[in-house]
Length: 83
Image 1 (cartoon, rainbow, N blue to C red):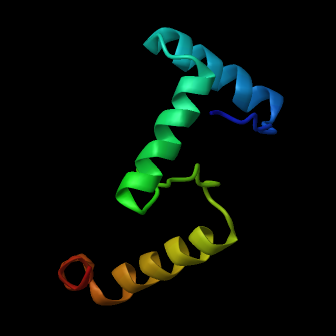
Image 2 (cartoon, rainbow, N blue to C red; image 1 turned 180 degrees about the vertical axis):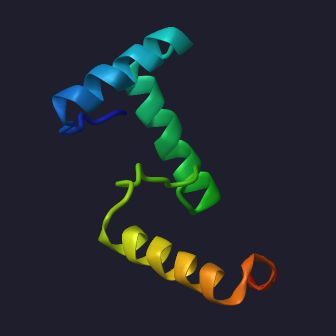
């Protein structure tokens, strides 16, 4: 027995997803069924979650400024050994 599920996707995301799935020869339904089965089997999201960073955003901008300040103040060798 199967049941129907509705998934709402941004139009651009759906278009990109459909293009990649077509290239792989997989239907959207098959993809979501595969992902769901793996989540149930593995008891975790079956892939790494990554995001597209906003480069630079306020946080990374402050981090860059801070790290550059440390490099200039204490020298590059000290900084690279710390990180």
